[in-house]
Structures are given as C-alpha cells and as structure tokens.
Length: 257
Image 1 (cartoon, rainbow, N blue to C red):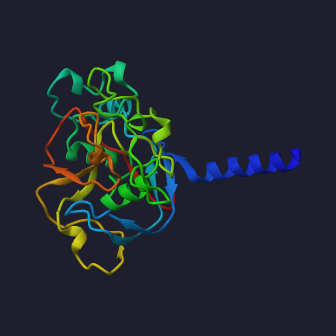
Image 2 (tube, rainbow, N blue to C red; image 1 turned 90 degrees about the vertical axis):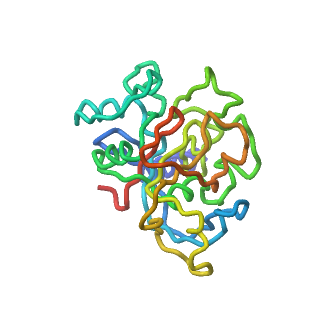
C-alpha cells in the first residue's frame, strides 16, 4: 500500500512539474492550458452570445503581474509611464505582492513584450478562468463573495495579494480571475464580435482587427454585483485608461521556450 501511495505521489509531482513553468525573464509562474474546444460566452448579456471556440495549447500566468515585478521592469528598461497618485506607484514596497495597477494597455503590452510573453486574448483569458468544466465563476456555478476580492471584503478599498483567496482558484489553477483587479486583454472590443459566423467553431480568435477600446476582464475590488465577476463578463476601456483597479497577466504560446 505504501508503495502504491509513493508511486501516486511521484506521479502527482511529475504531473504538476510538467504543467507549470517559470518565465526566467520576470519570474512569472505559468500553468499549461491544453488545446481544445470550449463554449465561450453565457448568453446572459447582449455581447456574450454562446459560441464554440478552439484554443491551441498555451501557458497563462497563475497570478497577475505584481508591483514588485513591474518595478524591476521599470528599472531594467527605464520605461516611462504616467503615474497619477501615490496608490498607483508600482514601487511601493508595502504592496509589492499586490497586482500592479494604473497601467494602461500600452504599459501592459510593453511589459509583456519585455518579458517575452503576450497579453492573453479574450478567448485565452476566458478558457483559463472557466476551467475544464466551463464554470460561471472560477470556483463553480454559484456566487460566493468570500471566494474573491470585492468591495464587500476589500480592506481600505484597495487590492489584495495576488495569491489571496485560494478557494477561488480556477480549475486550471489560476488565482483571482474574478475580483481584485480588472485585467487587460490583447483584443479590441466589439459588442457584436461573438455573433460573427455563429455555428462555426472559431480557432484562436484574435478579436477585431480595429477598434477604439480594449477588452478588460474579471471584475475588481471596486465592484460588488456578482454579474461583474462572471468568467464570461466583458468590459472595455480606452487603451490609455488607468485606474487603481486595473492590472494584467501574461500568456505564452506552447511549446515552452
């Protein structure tokens, strides 16, 4: 019996090792998301029509990019960005393991390129958030305000650590894809994009070619209504928008570098 337990433990460790990588450039930990078709959208809003999407293998960061990581990026590149107030300063050490905030889409994209990664497409983001069972919230199909960081449980109306709320982890192992901060996606936003070519399985959809606003996902500590925290909910802002509730995470195409 002990031998079987040891073999199972070894298999679990090997499986975990094979599913997770560390990006040496910035230290981000990424989890493997296997290729496959999933249902994107939930039909609850006019812009979330259900449709089938095939996504190729990819890696996505388990956590949002932290203030500490972003500070290292600034120091390494001398990157210049606008800072509006002290709360948005990514170098504040008291918040070093909180997600970096007050980054616009261009800032987030610049970091991703420096790290040798990309911003997730909207489809990549949603597949990771929904998990292998395509859930409405990362943890299940029922709302639980104790499983993510919202206005209801925010302390001093600010962010929390990127590894907080372990009960809210998605089926693929990603943290805080509901709550804490909105997250930039690579795509331009189009409210009718999901309705294009309905009935046809879309493969690795990149989003519209042009637009004026970029997609953000996940809800944030500023909100309380459960609808904002659905894995399917879509929101948007101009690429130069900054707020203390807006950050990002990374993806890498498979195979690992």
